[in-house]
Amino acid sequence: MNPQLPPLIELQALDLRIVEIKELQRKTPELIASAEAPLREATRLLKEATVSVEALTKERRGRERDLEAHEAQTEKLKARLTELKTNKEYQAYLFEIEMANKKKGEIEEQILVLMEGIETKQQEVKRAQAKVAEAERQFAQEKNRLEALAAGLVKELAELEEKQRVLTATVDKELLDRYAKLKAARKDLALAPVRDGICCGCRLQLPPQLVAEVKRSDVLQTCSYCHRILYWEGEPVNASVVAAEPLDRAEDDMQETV
Image (cartoon, rainbow, N blue to C red):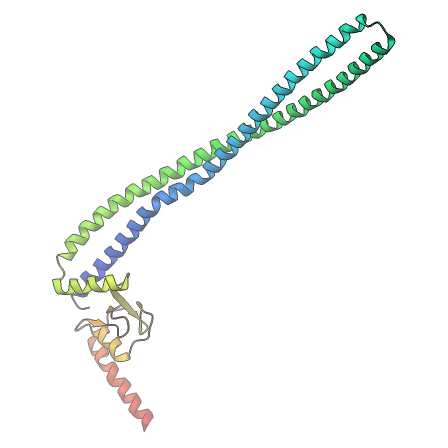
């Protein structure tokens, strides 16, 4: 392999990992927020259930006050029965008392319904509290994992950037500038391996002569289509064999012509 290629290939591997780490760091707050989503939902449901209990309790107390007021009024009606002079007045008061008792029964029924609703909602609150506790546990565990991962990424990034700085100093400046321009233009790979006669950067078939020259590695070769710097990826190639390949293909073509 051309001696200029290994440092560039290593530099590209470092650069790709650095980009990957920075992307992971960018996503870390999003991942933490996503991990917190179940806790936020459980908390919301708990709040809704708690508010429902409070509202039903408030309504029940209002009904109980209505019942007390109604009972007091009914007692007043009963007390006046002894004061009535005529049977007509007496019957009228009895009817009012009967209606009052009916109304009392309705209020008591409403209170019972509210009490049942409160009990149901209280059970819902207990279940919601348990879900919140479990969600808090899971979120704390996942947050700790993500924060530990983030700390590890910070350390790895510092180490990679130091390696990048040292390695960059070993590469010819003109070649380094060429590499930087290609990396900026292609957004990913400035160098691409050749596999099965294909440039792994643009996935296009390369001319056989160019593939042979890449294998030979006398000088740096670039892809005819995407202009990335090419290198041979595979078993070391015998130079005499590589040099003979174009000749062999030429002889085959001549035989086919004859």
